[in-house]
Amino acid sequence: MAIPQKFKDQVATWAGLVGKDSSDDPVAVGVTASGQLMTSGDVGPEAHDGQGESVSYTGTAGTSAAITGTIIDVTCTTDAFVAIGAAPTAVADGTDYFVSGGLTYRFPITSGNKISAIQLSSGGTMYVHPVG
Image 1 (cartoon, rainbow, N blue to C red):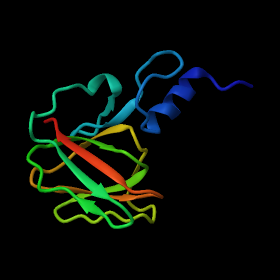
Image 2 (cartoon, rainbow, N blue to C red):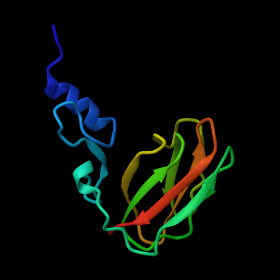
Image 3 (cartoon, one colour):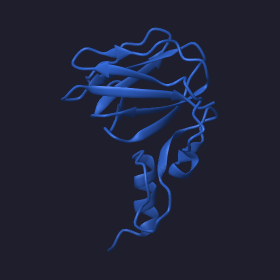
């Protein structure tokens, strides 16, 4: 029995992929502050100009400065784990949130908190942009 497309779409949505599925529908890239899934159609150039930050990470976590805003877009250049909090330090043991390199994720955040990233297998750069 073939898997119905709506179930394939749901799996793609929950996987947190950016882009379009085979039916050209948007798939999820994160959650809003109220917990609603956000789709690739929700990700736009509304980032606060001049407030983005780039943070390097390797086998040692890199951590952003305190963020002013309640929603952030995060893109890591390589596969990584991220943690958000008042003083986070991401760990690569699978307990923090995994992000695929090159994809943009949207996260709710408490204003004043930070985000930290650590590599899965190779270092990279995390780009953080407040959008709300």
